[in-house]
Amino acid sequence: MQPTQQPTAGPSMPPSPMPTMAPTSAAVLSLVKKICDDLLSTCNDISTEGTPQSKALAWLASDSKLEEYEEWRRIQRYVLATVAYSLEGWGSGGVVDWRYGPPDECSWVWGPYDSDKIEC
Image 1 (tube, helix red, strand yellow):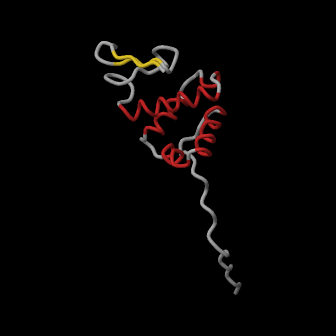
Image 2 (cartoon, rainbow, N blue to C red):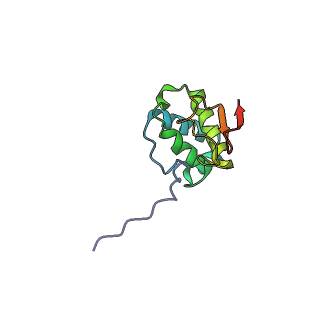
Image 3 (spheres, rainbow, N blue to C red):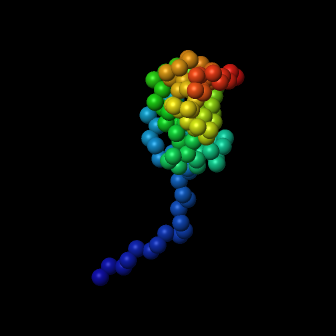
C-alpha cells in the first residue's frame, strides 16, 4: 500500500482578471493590457459578457483598420464606444457606427433625420 500525497501548503493565487473573449490581434491585446493595468474595475467589466465595456472591445476588435490606429486613438475609440453602448448602442435610434459612417470616431450623428451631432 502506498501513502497518499500531502495537500499543498496553501491555495494558489487566482489568475489576473482578463476578458473571456479571446482577442485576435496584438493591437487588441495591447489595449486590454493597458486597460487592465490602469483600470482594474474596467478590466473586470470587459470580462463580463453584455456590458458596454465588453461590447465596445468586441466592436473594436472587429475593426479591420484597428492595427493602423495609434494607441491613443484605439483608447479613444474604445472609450467612446463604451459611452455609446452605455447610452443607446448602434443602429436605429442609436449612435452611428463609425465603421460605416464618418471616418472619424469624433463625429457622432443620430436622431430621426441624423440631425443631432456631436464632435469632439
